[in-house]
Image (cartoon, rainbow, N blue to C red):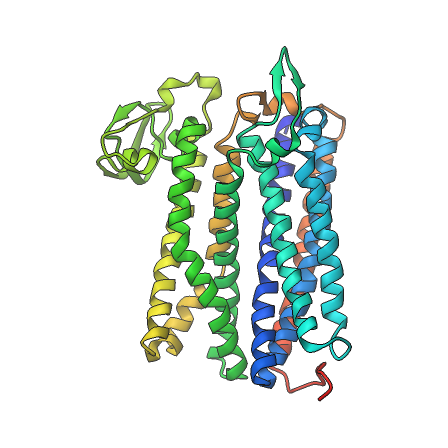
Length: 441
């Protein structure tokens, strides 16, 4: 493993773990706040127990997200100093604001965890809401920085120098909104279905049914709505990528040849040597409509780009298909759930449906991981799109391979510890009532 592969593998590993911690850390506070609101309104103790349980999960993912995010910031300086030398002064503002949001989130979560019986109930609830708002803001700001890598703006590039830097223009680049919207909805979908799947499994065990029924309704309702909105976000993103990064779109769809009335490819295995896609379903004009809103529009293919500037088609295409496939399954399940709730159908608590939800627990995060593969691998070979290639951003240093294995061990250990903590929290949900924090009457 050479230094370049080791550096990229380490970043991929770190991002792969961190994105899961970050998604849950951003979204779980909203579930917690809804449960807390229902407790304050109805004074049902199962909402109180659910709020306390979810708050412990929020605390776990806040800590692990902070640790894994801090490690990522070190890795940017350690592995990609040439990139950070030029990019840091340009897109540093969203990172600085993300630090501020994280600071406020830390204060809010402290108030919420230790504020039971000490604050006015509604102020206490407000601190929980602020945990979610600040956590979501942190995520959006980080995505804005990544968006800048896909749509670099806010500077003039003259003779290899980055001049006339405008941090505000860099932060609100052409990609930030579509990426932030898509990522936010994806986080709600992934976390909503994961939480719902866990509580569906516990509901099938027949213990503490009111608590698990309430948890399932909160998590899956939000996840289902987000899953239905996600294809709209995906369409907006696809049209944006078609304009800014046509090579990425071509790799996503394994679209090798420029043509009008370009077909939309579903499934298939790209043959990069012969520039064809085997075993695919093709919808005539589908890609033209997806990219430009016109079934007869011309879609640029990979044949318009030099070989050394084409993204890896096989990885990008398969990741895109996995993301879309998972998203469609979750969307259809969400529609079924909302229909069942609306019509008060008994199947929403039938064993087959709860079993389905349990099996779908990891599917949203599989889609999230696949989506980030599309975003990052589809941008290659650029680390700053059209400006700096990824290999140019690396400064070789001794021991990068050893660093990769060290970080692998750290993240696997962190994942194991978090899993054990969560299993313990889940087991505690079905135990007999223990003294819970409350408010004075």
